[in-house]
Length: 228
Image (cartoon, rainbow, N blue to C red; front, side, top):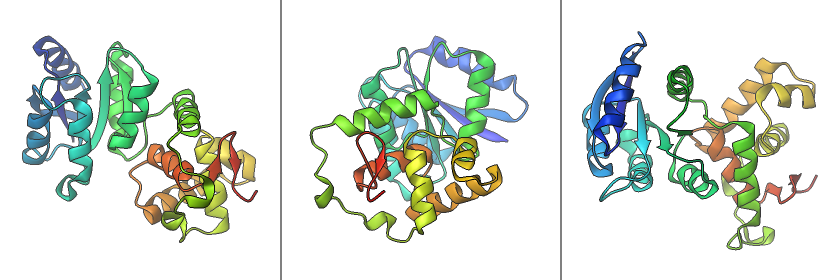
């Protein structure tokens, strides 16, 4: 059973999600929070697997609550899906940097929402290729990015050359199947490489792999792998 926590300051929104989630036999709503501080507290108390987190809430907002959950070792298994009324590039970037595993607009189809919770609960990132590519573009054009020579490759030091190659393709927004086709691997082998990379660099999901690949300089603007 996947334990879900709802965090939204609007009671009507929470009630709608609660009814919807309860229709799925493998999901269970274990709590409702009206602000970010309560969301962090309930995530810990109720041992939630997935938090549906609204961005705009009074006091502690959804982004700050996501940062607190991500930074708390006791909540290492908690996944956050950010919910908002519109898909903003800046929110995508901030949410992923904060530690979110996914990003959904509130008018998502019910079946897609249920599937999204399942995807994130099993450890996959909920980012469509288009969202991933926008995130990449945003990362690549940010003025505060240090020059390649100043970046710290430390987190990637333990990766094999093949794993660095796979990570570079993840950072280009390719799916496991697309990576498999590009490198002439089986889809299962591709997935295994990605899983092993995530373990080695201590990343929660593919979204954080993308950020890491750019911030360490493995991939540079324009999608070119450093040294390739």
